[in-house]
Amino acid sequence: MYVCICARVRECEVRAAVRGGARCEDTVGEACGAGTGCGSCHPRIAEIIDAEAPANTPVGAAR
Ligand code: FES
Image 1 (spheres, rainbow, N blue to C red):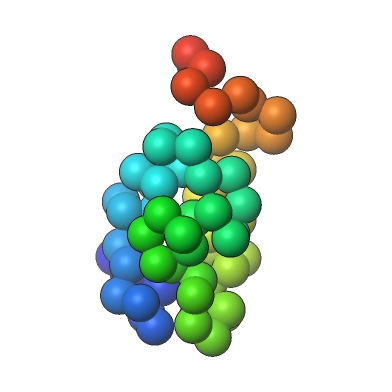
Image 2 (image 1 turned 135 degrees about the horizontal axis):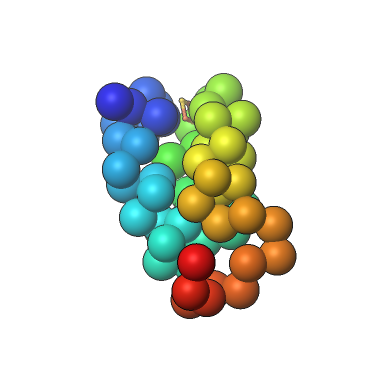
């Protein structure tokens, strides 16, 4: 399922970006391109960040 229509980025790609260290819409965009167009997908990207990396979870921390 696409999260970002503008950049044609799937949810699995956004999740992979977060697992790779992206922790905000900007760094997700840098990692996979999601959210770099109209911005309407930013709320969904934020939800995925929260799900994959709850607040203050250090990058690479065991979960
Ligand atoms: S749908 Fe993601 S930037 Fe437009």
